[in-house]
Amino acid sequence: MPAKYIAISFILVLSLSMLNPVNADEIEDEVAQESILNCEGINSLEFDGLAANQSVTFQVGLGPRLPGSNASSALLDSFIENNTAWNWTLDKHPYLDTNLTNLHGVYTPESNETDLPVVVLAAHYDSRDRAERDDDENRTDEPIPGANDGASGVAVLSELARIVPSLGLEHEVWILLTDAEDQGVVPEMLGAKAWAQDRTQEEIDSIHAFLLVDMIGDADLQINRVYPPKVGLSETDRLWDSVEGLASSLGLVKDVAACDGSLGTDIVNVNVLDGVIDDHVPMLEVGIPAIDLIDIRFGPNATKWGGYWHTHEDTPDKVSAESLTHVGHILELGLRQGSWLMDENDTLNEDTDNESKQSTQLSIVYSIIAFTFIGASLLTFGILHGSVRFKR
Image (tube, rainbow, N blue to C red; front, side, top):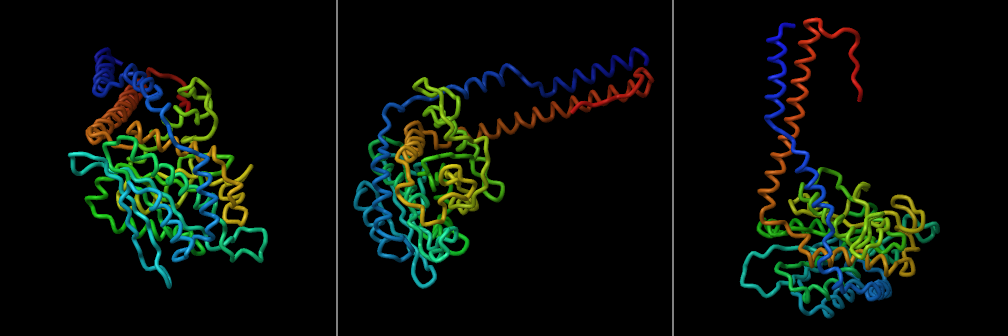
């Protein structure tokens, strides 16, 4: 090959690679920054797992919390009476021959500002109307106790409802207890669907996070990242990143040093994915950033959707105060640190991140094109001899 062609080839490589350079030092700095634990407020956590566990026992003691039942009414009345700092609304919707009732609570801090951002804490409070997985075929048509699948999430929100007014937050917090999530042959999330459809666009735009808790009382707690049946919002990545950071600080991520210096245990693992259709899905469908904290393996060595789930063994003695505390601490610490809020520059940052990703991708593409060009040139002019192999 004439020298001028070789020179042109290398000039092309240099030009293309300089168009979108990847700064390795910046990437390392970013990773290092993200790995720093945020321990602010961790010594001030107030969540009481024993009180939450007592709530589970109370709820189950009311009887099956089926839509329109006296047990459901008693539960909602108790929730409202014990949390007077909140503005509560009972949202009723037609359901078969009765009504389903969602409980929507709003806590607004004292502020001169309007249009405050919103964080929603949610759980379903109904218990399943059947036990299709029970070993006793004579009892499969009977309602389950619903200690973990129903009462555990409500118990966590009950404690958080007590704590939120004392946190000095600068944003609104909403609590949503959905009805009729677990009714029917296939749970239909009717309460969540009704609530999502009733939201105005202004309300949707104000919600920075919808944090669903469901089946989180298992003594053998394992929370993995949950994905809906379709591609969700990019904002869910932000929320799961927050979950991982908070869990790391609390010692709930395996072999990661916590704020107290101890190595974390394997409670939260966002690198494992579980597909779950739950009350977060209707939220995603209307444009609300939503995630689901759930353990779909209920009981020792349980498989996915196995163990005590949807059986009469879903009783209060299977629910762990320690597990309730773990989840309560993640949510409370996130509120204290502002982890659930979208940064005011997030839109700009998202655009910058997208540009950076596109820039990196283009750099790779350009490099491939350049080296392909060189290889083709060398092959064309007979400078390379023998076979060419690619390693994957």
